Amino acid sequence: MPRIVFVGPPGSGKGTQAAILAKAQGLAHLSTGDLLREAVAAGTPRGQQARSYMEAGRLVPDDLVLQILSERIAAPDAQHGFVLDGYPRNLAQAEALARITPLDAVIAFELSFPELEARLSGRRVCPVCHTVYNIVTKPPATPGVCDREGATLVQRPDDQPAAIRTRLSVYAEETAPLLRYYQDRRLLRTLDARGSAPDVAARLARLLR
Ligand code: ADP
Image 1 (cartoon, rainbow, N blue to C red):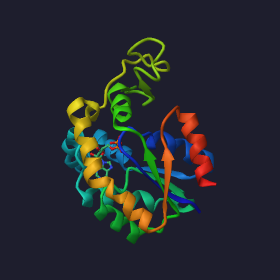
Image 2: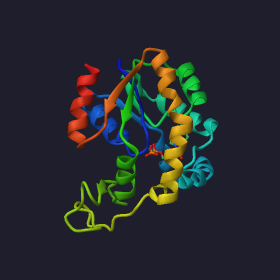
Image 3: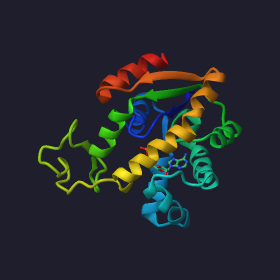
Image 4: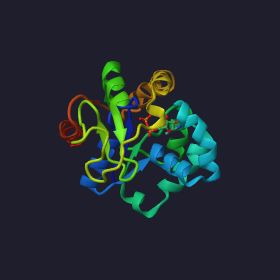
């Protein structure tokens, strides 16, 4: 039963790769970013609390994220293994996670800062089907319009330049220390996250064999 965690800076492709790997191996895809965005969209009390942190690119308070994750990880589909994407993001969260579940592997996504910035600032999303585009690397057929829905593409509020800078510095200060934490526990494997999504997926599959 594989229990895999993805750690990496925003824009390194964790969400994309988690979806591909989960589908290929029949694992649950647990994304705290997606769970939080759903709570915001649904307007729940937790969503209302999380919203301003997310839009600014800051971490949502640990206790709130832990509540959301604990509920999700207890669901039936997560009992046969999971890919956890977006959690933990600091040492306190790593310690909380260790109290909930053992892990089999932690994948560290590696990409340079200029590449991260280009991916994040170029990202556009369909508000209807959530397909992710990039104005440089994966543009839609008609600029600004979803290929599937015909809807006008939007930018995530936290993909605005000020929030991108905040997210990258939060990663460097709070999340990057986790690499050492998991290396010390012999769980860490490093993934070169450059290139297209299928290329990275193939590299990841080799890393997990
Ligand atoms: P990215 O990794 O590209 O920043 P995510 O979708 O994983 O995007 O997360 C978006 C936002 O959701 C984060 O900037 C943060 O505000 C919030 N968030 C997600 N996971 C966590 C977490 N484990 N702890 C605190 N905040 C989180």
